[in-house]
Amino acid sequence: METVRRAEAALMAGLPDGVLMQRAAAGLAAAAAGLLGRVYGRRVVLLVGSGDNGGDALYAGARLARRGARVTAVLLRPDRAHEGGLAALWAAGGWVVPAEEGGDLGAPLCRVFHRVDLVLDGIVGIGGSGGLRPPAAALMRLVRDTRAPVLAVDLPSGVEADTGEVRGEAVAADATVTFGTYKPGLLVDPAAERAGALRLVDIGLGPYLPEVPELEALQHADVAALLPEPTAESDKYRRGVVGVVAGSERYPGAAVLAVGGALRGGAGAVRYVGPAARAVIARYPETLVHPGPPGKAGRVQAWVVGPGLGDGPGAEEVLEQVLATDVPVLVDADGLRLLDRVRVRRRSAPTLLTPHAGEAAALLGVDRAEVEARRLASVRSLAAAYGATTLLKGSTTLVAAPVDEHPVRLNPTGTAWLATAGSGDVLSGLTGALLAAGLAARDAASVGAYLHGLAARTLAAGAPITAHELPDALPAVWRDVRAA
Image 1 (cartoon, rainbow, N blue to C red):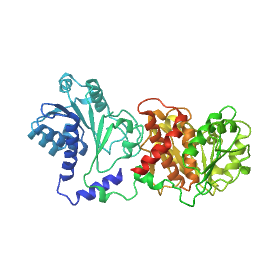
Image 2: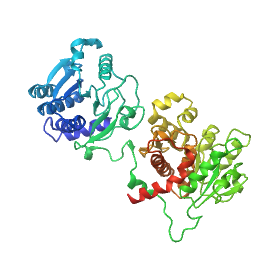
Image 3: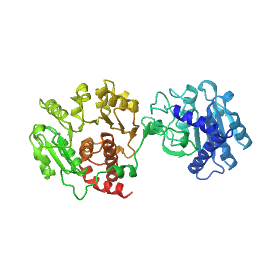
Image 4: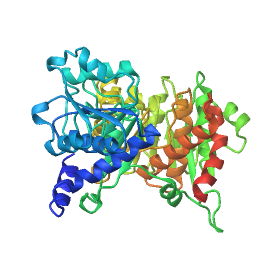
């Protein structure tokens, strides 16, 4: 978060003392009032640490107290609490209670949380690291027992602002008000799941932030600008032909799902190579099928290889043949398990890897838990190690380029209902079609994940879905994105 600190310092240099904190406090108080619904007579507790994060909470509490709320600040470090914020809260009629030393929370403090309506987490800000200290952790256990909603100040205390990691106990907020810019820890799991609903308060940092952020997320307009569109002179070959090497005697459905994603992803034609031709043709008769090898199937603009490929004797050979081509290649599922790092790095054409956390762990030689705990670092490491654009699937889907000149992209459209067998096969076909249409690997992965997530959200509407439904939902979300 060094970039944020530098931006804040540059902005404060041109402002009177305290103006920046008052801007943050005003936005925080407004969000708190929104959660409370009615401010007058409500009970609000502030959990106040020693930094500016605690000062923001104190000034916001003073604003709420002036509107008739009963506000009590619990100070974890009374000797280091923000003096101006404390004075403002006292002047507004608020109360101040020191937390017990060592996390031994006695009866007087317990009474503070009796019938509380809202808790503001101002324990630590972007400078915190390593999880909550014992006194703060004990305080949060007391808060959880009250079941009062928690509003985090800038980010939930205890999470890592830069990476989204959670290295110890951390606050689980119902909502978070963040200032100036979104921090990676608010967007990347496992920290993101602790942030709740997000609200960004503009405090004037924009001109002082770097032009290239660490993390970005595409929106409808960005995706619409990238979507391929046929012209009057287009034919099926100009629109892009994608080759799909997928499926096996054991997993024929993977081939059907990948081909469906490719056809509904805008491909002019799909060439399928593999043993599941009969199942593919039965579902998608427009598919061009070939028994193999891939090099004899006909010209394509991109290949998708791996879904349902299995571990038969020919799997490694067909993967090698596909990687030897001079067109973009997407490698997924079983193809990832057979991947050779040196071989991928030697390719002259783009390579796109689409692992889930378990597959990423195997590629990196680490435990799955490490990938899930360090998603941002993991996707960067994979992209750099293999010299390939990497789409890391999961609760937070991330796309990283093989070099650091581009921000990591976060997909904002996913849903937990996508955690179903075969959904990744559809994503592979869809993204492969975008590669064949001429999108760069980073854009194809980002747009594919975006449309895939939207299709799942549209289908699910709060209920279970199956992967074979996803391809037919793609045209509707494609039109919605274009119309936005």
